[in-house]
Length: 164
Image (cartoon, rainbow, N blue to C red):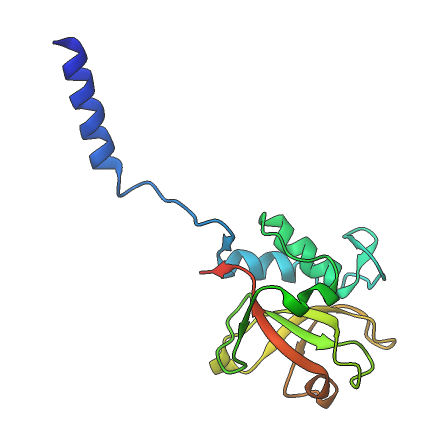
């Protein structure tokens, strides 16, 4: 009789607690956590080839570091975004999507720069990235529409995680 009672008690416990168990899907992160963490690096120095906060970041090193913090695997090099993630229509981007640009030579249409989108489509495209710009290098926020430089270098937007 005792084992049956324990089994019933366990079953009732599972059923009544089923709604309180929160399971986070793999490769997902809250937009608030993602934005808070990424923006905590604003002003951090640019450092080519680095994904180490104390040294600074290059663009893909910054994106890699931020997503890796949440156990989400993304490429370490911007060129690897050529065939990575789900391509998103430019009018349908969300916070946490990755914006992919050419390198400084806009005629070479291969990925050379990446950033993390910090706005929804209704707000206009803004992103955080590590810039090598000589006057304003390092982690900064940029607005896509305010810079013809980024418009001509734009390649695509990709979704690499479920951001809720």
